[in-house]
Image 1 (cartoon, rainbow, N blue to C red):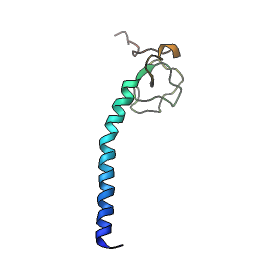
Image 2 (tube, rainbow, N blue to C red):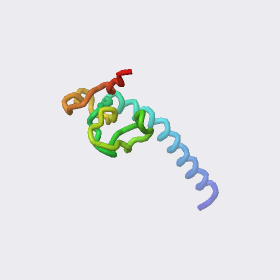
Image 3 (cartoon, one colour):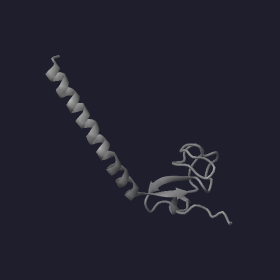
Image 4 (cartoon, rainbow, N blue to C red):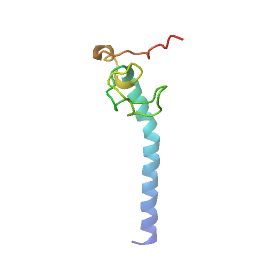
Length: 91
């Protein structure tokens, strides 16, 4: 492969990475418009994000903990037995 072909291949690869990076936030925004957080339905180890007790997804210790949440399709949270808001701490 000559230097010119290599340069074009590298430029194409870089252009693809830039396009992918630009599209990722847009895809995340679309997902967030179609989904909502649902508290109290996550199974142990299947939560989508952290809580006051931990900072990472996948660290829920027990099924259906009221402060753990998952993304679900909009309009389905309460049908699944969850709540759209986290529990209050009663402080």
